[in-house]
Length: 289
Image 1: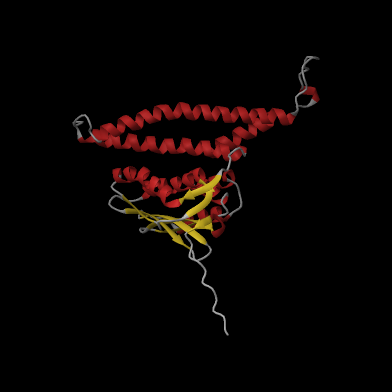
Image 2: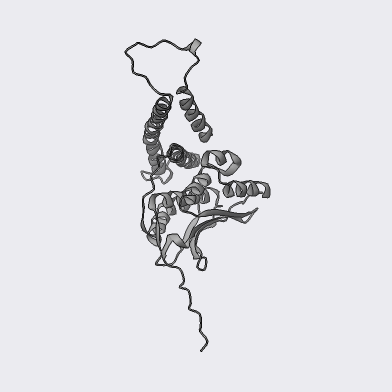
């Protein structure tokens, strides 16, 4: 699991900064400057993040090539492949590349969260525009699996939010939906006001759904106050855990419903304090004269 690797990596970095017992300590040169344990741990953590960033680049470059060429092959852009199995192989290669690339991106996001260096840049976000961009991004991936992506959102909703984090959270939900939706079905991306309390952005797939025990475990993890690294190993999955983390940074929450044979819906709730426009206006009370 990626999260286990990261947790142990950072723990090792922190441990490296602790002072060794006197009997085991190697004498340093008299002119060497003193180095505090805190500084050493911080340096190790920084080197760890630098390593992860470098590795992500090294992985992304060949992955983009794998996905690009396999996409050309599965669509037979330059002509027929010949044997029908070859097209199926190209499909599997492309899907595996997409899956691995999503894990690499999730790994980077997890590293930023764990380090505390992920910056929140809040601005006015036009939600319909953001959702339209996401729909365009995932329509092709869904179509390749024989799934149709449908969006239903009000024309004018403004949020006070970090655009990157909201986009990342919804991207993880859509990736899960595309992966689990059954061929010939649909994925629904919808936005609904929750009265005067806020809005709900929901992603629904019509896949196999999940058993009750798994659903309850995920609900417990989503409702906890634990950080990403505390809940990622509880069967919640990297994408859902990161979506929950980014939603919580906007004072919101995630909820999940699922039923075997009927699919899954994950709902992101954002409170009214985050919604600048788009909620129904409160009607004034009638006064008796």
